[in-house]
Image 1 (cartoon, helix red, strand yellow):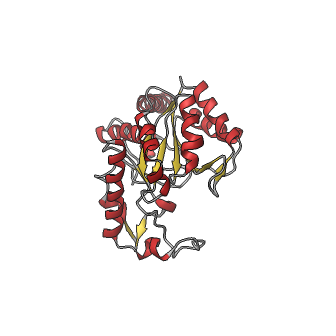
Image 2: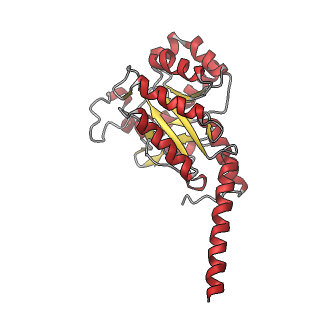
Length: 273
C-alpha cells in the first residue's frame, strides 16, 4: 500500500513538473506571460502609452475602433507604433455594445449591438480589419469584444470570425494556465484606479503560478472614465523591465499564436469544454 502511495505521489509530481516545463516553453522559456492591452484608440495611447512602452522597449496591443477620429487624425503615428512592434488590434468599426443590458444608458440606437444582425457585426469587424491592414500591412491580429459583449440574440458572433483572427480578448478577470485559455474569449483584468503595487502584485501572482496575465487599460494618466495613474503605470512597466528574464511581455497576437500552436499540437491538452 505504501508503495502505491509513493508511486501515486511520484506520478503527480512528475505531471506537475512536466506541466510547468510545458508552460515555460509556451511562455518563451519564461515563468509567465504578460500582455498589456489598451482599448478604444484614444489620444492618450499615442501621447502617454506608446512613449512609455518604447522608453523601456516593451510592446503592447492597442485595440482600435475604426471610426475613432484619433485613428484618422493620427494614422501616421499608429503606423509608426506598429513598425516598432506594437499590435494594432481590432475593436470593431463602431464599437457596438448591447444596449438591452443593465447600466447601458450610454449606448446609442445606432451602435446598439442588440439591434445588429450577425451579418452586420461581422461585416463591420472585417471592414475594420481592412483599415488596420492599410495602416500596418499585417494580416495576423487579435480582436477585443466591445464592452465584453459576446452575443447577438443568443448567438456568439465571433464563431464566424475565428478564421479572421488569431484570438479574441474578453473582459473576465483571471489568470490562466495554457490549457485553460479559451482563444475565443481570453481573460483580462480591467484596470481602473489600481495602484502600482496592486498592478505588480498581479504580475507576481502570474509568476508564481506560471500563468497568462492580460491587463486591460483605457485611460493612462487621463483621457477616459476608466483610468490608471501615470505613476502606477510607470511602476508596472519598470517592474516588468527589471524582471524580463523571467516574464515574457509581448503583444496579444504573439502570445495567442504560441498558445494556439501548443493546444493544436497536443503538447498542451486544453481543458476548455
